[in-house]
Amino acid sequence: MMTASPAAIIQRQLDAYNARELETLLQIYADEAELYEFPATLLARGTAALRERFATRFREPNLHAALLHRIVAGDTVIDHERVTRTFPEGPGTIELTMIYQVQHGRIVRAWSIAGPKTLAGD
Image (spheres, helix red, strand yellow):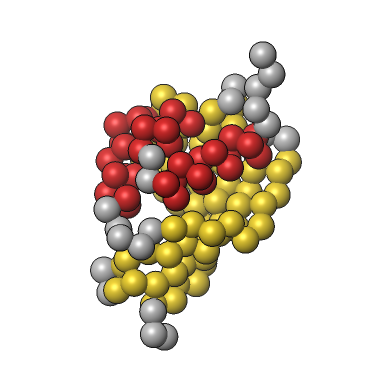
């Protein structure tokens, strides 16, 4: 059986995120996957921590990640996204660069780099 390409795996991750399919999303991450704020601030490690982080995010009523650009280099996928969120100060968008490392068909590490945040009405 052929393993899906890293780009296909990250697209499944993005689709599951936007559909708020928590269990599907968690299956795409390795059991001990790590999520970082770039370069090295650990945000979550392992399925339980990822579950808590994503479940909290999925409660936001307007959550949606729009892919603006994708780069694939071997097992690394870099996505530039515009994410619609409900921030403590109100609804808006934030630009994110997400870097994913894929091994054996699952995400083992991911890093986020936050860009500009815009509140609705700004």
